[in-house]
Image 1 (cartoon, rainbow, N blue to C red):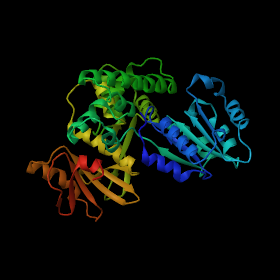
Image 2 (cartoon, rainbow, N blue to C red):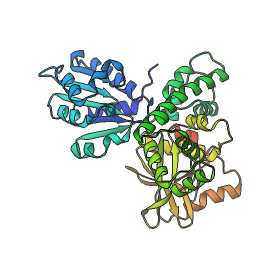
Image 3 (cartoon, rainbow, N blue to C red):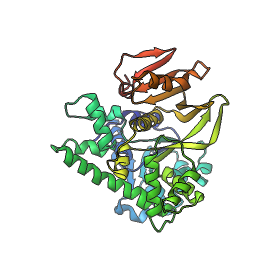
Image 4 (tube, rainbow, N blue to C red):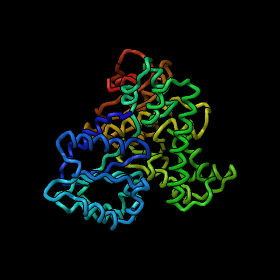
Length: 406
């Protein structure tokens, strides 16, 4: 089952034939390969000949001889159609050492439109960024948004039930295909667990361990468990080190930082830095971390009780990224705003809470927003089904309707 990821597809169409390398990044299994397959179908429908299209998945053993950049370049170059535009698609390009040399060699050709995918943000650092500065555009993919998930959901169900499945079974596209089967909830949970275990093991126990040359997985997995249990909470590198060490998994702060960098490079983990709203500057301590998928959190921690507010916060954080925002944690004096965003819409502020039905809870959630003295838009997102209302200019919205774009 192909799921049309229209926003990403439209971006590819916008940059088609532009002299820029198109780099699609994102966590494994979020749909990068499928996106490019659908785009290739679009090219054929536009009249592009199949001989003008080359598609190489570097995780397919068929292409095992192309993991050298020179061989990759020669293979593609020998198959180019002269005097016509050639559309080159290379999946998981980071598997090729010095891949930037092959990419640069193809980029300088006038009849090549180049599309790459990668599951590691390191592919855009160092020599790569210097070599192709200003000559590439990144399209960063995430697993399915709630709107994409609900729009493809086939079973008759209310929006709250669909959202529960979104949290329980995960937002990875493959899970929607599993849900088309006539399976019980128990069978779906088992399918979800096996599928997510495959993703987790590939990323954490293969990619991250290989990148950091980790020989024993124990401390890395304990770190992942710590972060998964603390999403939406302010944490420091030293606190992680101290806590894990006191629990018997001795780990130095520098090692914690190195592991966290690798987890972020693999796009399984995202960090939100703190921003001083009044001082208008980034702060260096007490960041927050969010997982790329809440289903992975359930896999990592089991069915332990979860803070519903922090789970919701994680979902909103990812949605803000999808909407093209730079996202920070806001500090206003001694108060905290869940998210400060910068985008083409300017600055906006968001508070996220599961419910604000109690007067004290409502006052607590509104207080940080009231403390901000500018006139930028401010929002309070909750699961409450109350009529949309405003508190001195702060818009209170149902978060599921907001996620659906309503």
